[in-house]
Image: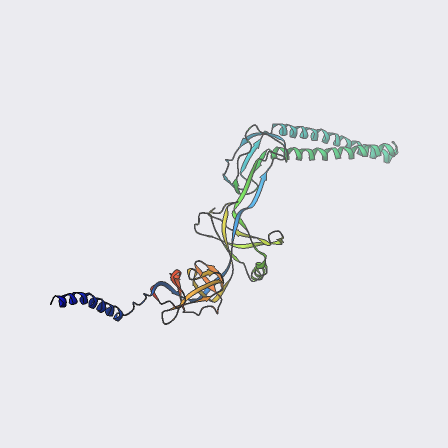
Length: 368
């Protein structure tokens, strides 16, 4: 009896072990979970053909105001940074020396007119005497020459008066264009020279305003072809990334920069709100045309690998496969693909690609 109990105790654990092993073999293997992804449909839509660049603002006109006469500044009528209109008084010079010169020129004119009148009377007298044979013809010719000289002196005096009046007028310096004044460079008491430093003030016309930018030379023929069909719109976004300003392409340079291979372009903006500024960097978008029936997918669906760009797409059996694609351009988060890369309506993976390999089963958690 004792031996029988010992045998039972020995065999019991072995029986349990065998039963456990059989149970483990009978349980089915676990099925791998589908990888959750986000997906979207490839669509056909109209998409713009655009060129993107970094541009800089340029004043529509820039004028460095200089004095036309030498003198001393008596008053400055503008404040630096002020918007001035064409014809506004900017600077006054001391005009007393020029006013005195004007009076002197007027006095000389009066004197020479009197001399000319005397010479005219003498010519008339000697003309009658010469015709009567009282005086020789040489004396008449001399009187005629004196009269001509007196008339020339009168004309010179009149020119001197005009010059003196101009000099007096030049003492009041007005804005030649409307625009923004720069830093104040002169103050009352400053001695200025004619057409020389210091410059009185620099005025920039900022409405309208240019934006300069460059694009690679391979786009030059396209730009010229589309310009021949009409005005090309240009969008500029200021550095604060606020709303864009609308303008148009107004200038294509006459030569390509040989050192960079770029062509310089210039767009004109009304800039009525003064949101663009000379020298400011802006993001520029030049729209060439509108492409109809473009195949478009979200930009996040396109991945870049060693062989180039590719995407994952979902097959009807909810497995994925990869396919190389050619991205023509990306605009506002949407990538335009070559027409044969993806079929319209095909489901492409937009998120979760890091866990994917071809053949993996997926589940779409959120369709965009």
